[in-house]
Length: 85
Image 1 (cartoon, rainbow, N blue to C red):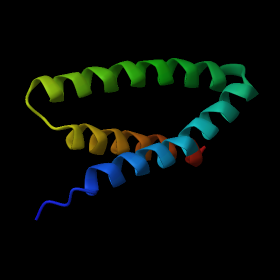
Image 2: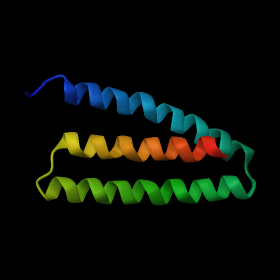
Image 3: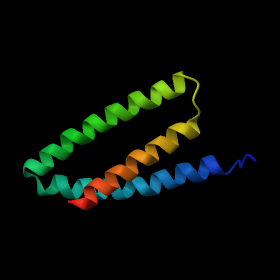
Image 4: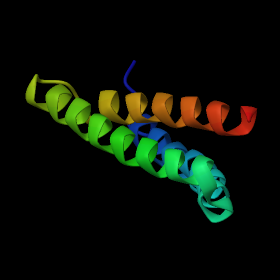
């Protein structure tokens, strides 16, 4: 059964979850050095890749819900990577 609140909930969760990644990245960038430079480069590359993936999904007939769900997967992976080090 379709839940009309699920897309809104999923988008809100993406906004909340992404704040943790922003925090972790800002700390890494503030420390600078090789880790900061590597994180800056990775951040730009990931954002470009995610935008290309989202565009391809939407142009291929995918839904906005699919795009948000995939972004949440990326955010979860970044959170895991940034908290492991």
